[in-house]
Length: 360
Ligand SMILES: *Cc1c(COP(=O)(O)O)cnc(C)c1O
Image 1 (cartoon, rainbow, N blue to C red):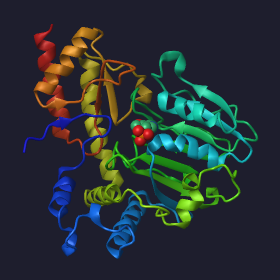
Image 2 (cartoon, helix red, strand yellow):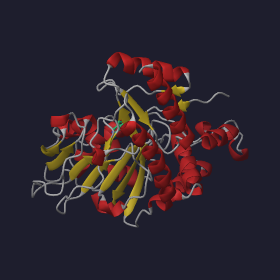
Image 3 (cartoon, rainbow, N blue to C red):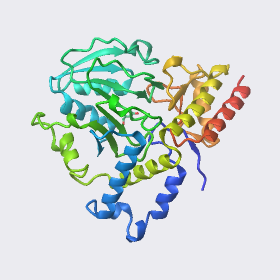
Image 4 (cartoon, rainbow, N blue to C red):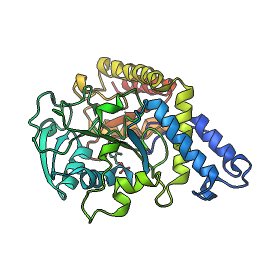
């Protein structure tokens, strides 16, 4: 086996221990004589898998009683429509646009109601998080929307916006389970699993129960109605069984590693190592405002596009893969999610130093 350090933004690396365990159960899950992919989602074996996944996530996030966990499909992008469809009661919402994912979400929401962009960092190519302490929140607004960690630009809200009493809806795809959060600060948070918790094809939503409403427009597809999914225990139809099973294993792994405060500590150490190096390097720099830096996605550039390309290629040759920045911004990006070991970041920095020396 020849594992690489995979810095992909998503689908991203998963803990080796989880992959090994899954592989040992691949052909015969706990004496059932079949894999989890082959078993009925109505079986008690699978019911146990999804129930345990939900309970373990509850422990990790200390999810309060009045919140529900939903395992959904369609990627985080599907939620860009599901959110306004389910939550726009007054047909007004306030969006904070800090990158492409939030922009896409705002654009999708415009199909269902009035969208106010109350803050944006588009003026400086999304390289910072705007001050959100006193926004012009509409009095009729149904919710305030953010993308909490901007995967493409490498920025993160260090402080949640002041929503002036409105419910906060957050796309937490790329920071989910990277550190402890206070669930009750959110009306709804959702995350595509493939960034930090499992395989693509699963979206996890944590939603306050009173937002799971029945009085929503008739045109809303049955599958996209949170109430349908909540009433059916995320099994209105066949759920992404195998993906949920892997997510469950990742939750158990995180609990065993000490939960989210241990993750935070580990992630802070990794991010500090990399940012400190970027700050002292003569060749590489991080283009993001210091107070907005993401702990999960670290972007950097040399200032020379050809050199960037050469770096990405040479790094791959050393088993440091997927360091190319998002196609829309260029440069480099190292995604250092939970499953990226400290040694992976050390290896990256050591290669960057070597590259810097050679190309001085
Ligand atoms: C990756 C990503 C998405 C899109 O996820 P899909 O599952 O591909 O739809 C949305 N938001 C954020 C913050 C992301 O990182």
